[in-house]
Length: 150
Image 1 (tube, rainbow, N blue to C red):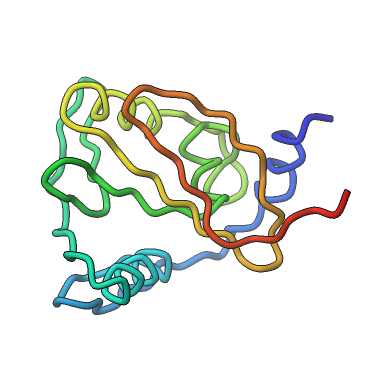
Image 2: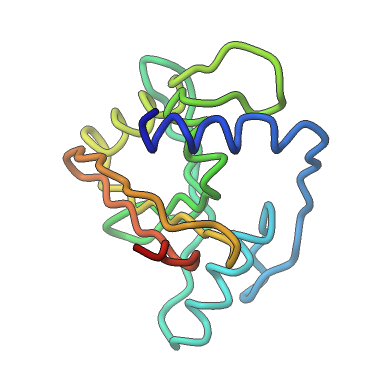
């Protein structure tokens, strides 16, 4: 079984009872989930300029709203589970049909509006997956996780 399929099997049912929490982040920015809050705290700690909340982007497939925006790129914060969902490799809340609609919107915005940086936060219990996604104007950065022993 491929590593991608193993990841899907592991995370597909993880979010059945998941509820999103909102937080007040640095600079008065509202955050949806701990990942976004972690990103903003990292930016603040590194004394870099804080982003602004991104405006919705209208695509031919529907509206996509990145998490944050800088003048030259958007930032999307994800967990490995939400990344797999956006790629259409898993469902968000248990049963259902996976869809890559969000990924199609991300690709369209990256091509037609401005580049997107996707930051994927891994817990210290999650192995760092091999991510081989090459798309123009999309950069994926994995943070955290643990290396598998050979």
